[in-house]
Picture 1 (cartoon, rainbow, N blue to C red):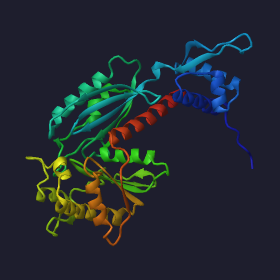
Picture 2: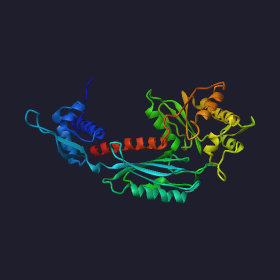
Picture 3: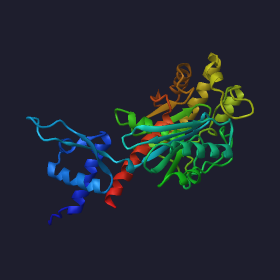
Picture 4: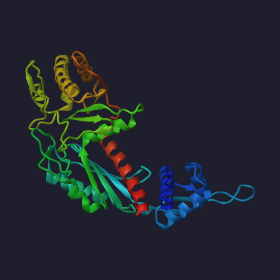
Length: 372
């Protein structure tokens, strides 16, 4: 068999990627540092640094290592150029629109927030999103390469539009984040449902490498994300996991839609289908037991259809100890059940997932620029 040797250009490209990734992990490194960390020879690293400097991806910081008098040669520190750009991580949720600007080191270099009403007209959210994105650009050098958006509403997979489903508690009308944000970024705008981003964040922080689970969100709204073989399953149109209309056991032991359970228990905000989190937390024992049975019926359906290793429960009331105990107690009585545990991330889990995706895509875009 004839062995095909990699081309010189491929070797250079791989070397440059190694150097860029090391500089993404550390703010500044010398060529000697880069050689030691990457396992490449000093001449190879030196040539890579030269190419990347000419491509305006790497710069000499002007800082030098101590040298002379037996301490070796003076070394120059190199860093990523400001021109490599940044990415936006965005949350569109009932508590407001948040826009973060993230650099290639994973640092948040800008953050702005705008409150919105509940429920929110699409026009109001559009204005808040445009304003927040504009403010995130101020005072920071370099282009914005891309944006990743977490939205607390169903997202049409093909277009990234937020779509209105019956009993959705947040957005009034349809919203197109791609259209709003395209003037602000040089590359793609990626939009997905907030529960999917939260599930990805939980997957990424799991020390055992969790790859098959269901993430159930119980807050002002209801949602579910199924992660199978490490990937979020979004369905044909992108609205997989909309559990509000699953049929479960109601407070009077009658079959009812999950969303209607909260009406029966008087747990909705007035004039909307949004769930009143404080009322849920203050439920007496009988109310907690009824809610636990209703949630357990939903979990049973999820387990029957998706066969997860475990179910993770997040959201503003789903992880509340007394509510979670009621859910687990009811679910263990089901003929088929799996482990149920609370989500680990309590603070901005969806934005955490979107931010991680933005960082990964930003780094990939910077490396891809070297190959052009």
